[in-house]
Amino acid sequence: MDVVMKELFGSDIGLLSLFTIGFLIAMGLFIWFKLSKKAHEGGN
Image (tube, rainbow, N blue to C red; front, side, top):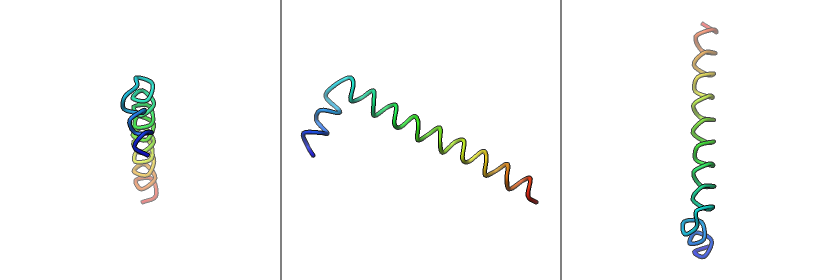
């Protein structure tokens, strides 16, 4: 496992993939939050 982490953080491609995954998760949470907020306002 340490070797995998070293490869991820040691190479540009690994850092880029980590950044991309983090960005996708952040966008997913943001969209989910907006949709759930809109659903609550529309339901009441």
